[in-house]
Amino acid sequence: MSTIAENIAKVRARIREAAQASQRDLTTVGLLAVSKTKPAAAIRQAHAAGLRDFGENYLQEALAKQTELTDLDLIWHFIGPIQSNKTKLIAEHFDWVHSVDRLKIAERLAAQRPANLPPLNICLQVNVSGEASKAGCQPDELNALAQAVTQLPQLHLRGLMTIPEPTEDPAAQHAALARLRELRDGLNLDLDTLSMGMSQDLEAAIDEGATWVRIGTALFGARDYGQAH
Ligand SMILES: *Cc1c(COP(=O)(O)O)cnc(C)c1O
Image (cartoon, rainbow, N blue to C red; front, side, top):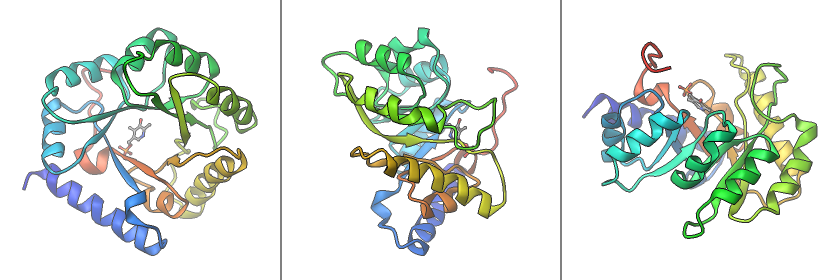
């Protein structure tokens, strides 16, 4: 087995145990492999080990890998910060966008999603930790944003996403992740998705209702930002 295949088996075991401990149906927890900074060959190995969903943060890097991997049946998720001038290519080349945090970006994605493709799956990114530097809309802006996004053509609002302040304290992990679930429930929209949980906090995330855990390091190893970014 490749290292990546071994890592996938370990992460799957963590997900399975967490789902069991939280009495959740395992089929409701998706594993999104975060492949940013990793080569197309790593995605190919992960695909061979059964993964289909891949998350990328940097548009040009993602497009280059997509070009190398057109022979595979992959589902592409954009999970990084979005500048306005990137929306057209994101709308054309991804199946999901997890990081929509303002209406202008949603409007551009809606207008630029090609008519021959299914609606783009959207999560609204929410800043649940209140750090000034982090992306994501504020909780008090969420309701207006969500209502507006549901009105846009060619988008399917699926749910919410968050990147909480990193902490190893399980109580603090739970508090931030529970907040996202409560915000979702408070919207009174038919939202089936909570994109939360990374390598460090996937157990807490599954316990709080995550439907996508976004896992990079635990699958592909530590990232080297030396050259590209
Ligand atoms: C990099 C990244 C991840 C993966 O984080 P790990 O700690 O490496 O598992 C998940 N979500 C987002 C939005 C990321 O940018």
